[in-house]
Length: 140
Picture 1 (cartoon, one colour):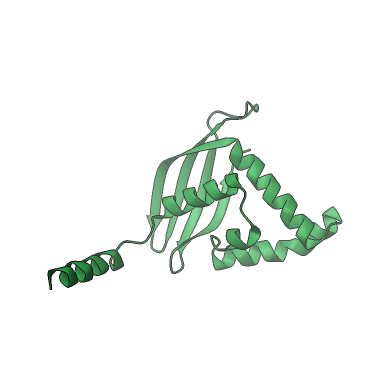
Picture 2 (cartoon, rainbow, N blue to C red):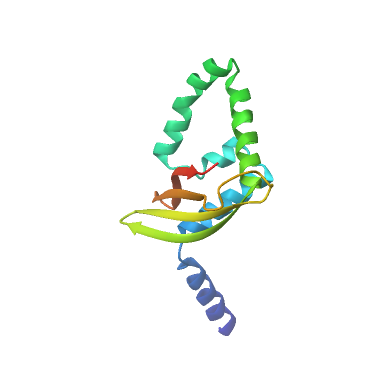
């Protein structure tokens, strides 16, 4: 009886856990970008509107770059990874408004590039059955 009670209490407590915070979701995403994320995996972090925006931009980039969709995606992933690898981020401020949150990070260049020491990342997250990235502005 005691073992059953402990097991059911354990299941109940883990089932009531709070969802990941917006900052922990973004920082997990950032770590995965640094490590090399696939586009299919990356899409899971995007809000519905961000994913639609990204998907709609492919034809324009394909025409400009004269590359296939797969080549544009590879270029984008490689570029994102190279930028993320050179930016150490630290959460400065979190502004919540209803079902959205704006995260402001300080970023420090770790690759010796000539960049502004006061550069920031501004990340808008929305809650769509879990926190998703709606937009990201990164100071290069």
